[in-house]
Length: 263
Image (cartoon, rainbow, N blue to C red; front, side, top):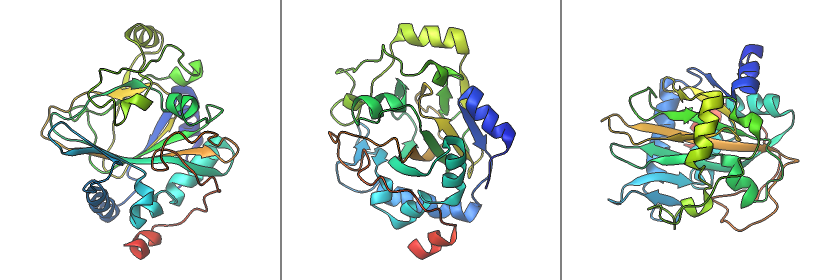
């Protein structure tokens, strides 16, 4: 899959573009099965709701060969190379599941943590989201501030020690203050990011985004593969490998046949 010039322009101007129905129903089913299996792992790489159910797993490519194959898939890697103008490595991968009455994700930039904690020098990278469920306005879609990537790193972000998941994840997430968010939304607006299952989101990792609680009975399962150019690698190693890359080698793209081999 190649992005069109209009999609590349949308990425540059808005900060993201969604390519619809990139993966087939069978591929979505295979990836969903793999993701749900990884979410059952007992280790610290799985973050949980207050009731113990999983809501996120970091480093999915380290724990399942099917998900590792996804992180090398040509439909993710080739468009990212086009957008970034260089070979790429996976800085972080993760599974996010929004179940009914699950967690809220506060406003943030992925690059904020990657820069402040992992030592990634420059705001050059793509957050790739693979939709394994239909994502609509009703099941807590990602909310993005279009054009916010043009403002660079938001300096007024801060840690929130009172967050219920502080010890697991938000101690590394620099949430953006209410005052800053109000200014960003006044200048740029706020949009939902939706698409049918099998679609792929390509988002500049400096875009300000978040998501609210899912009060619907409809699950929202997404896989994220965040890539950086190989000349923009992390320089500190405070976090475990499932959070932040240790392998900075250029990814060689593969096709869907790798799913079947890995499975």
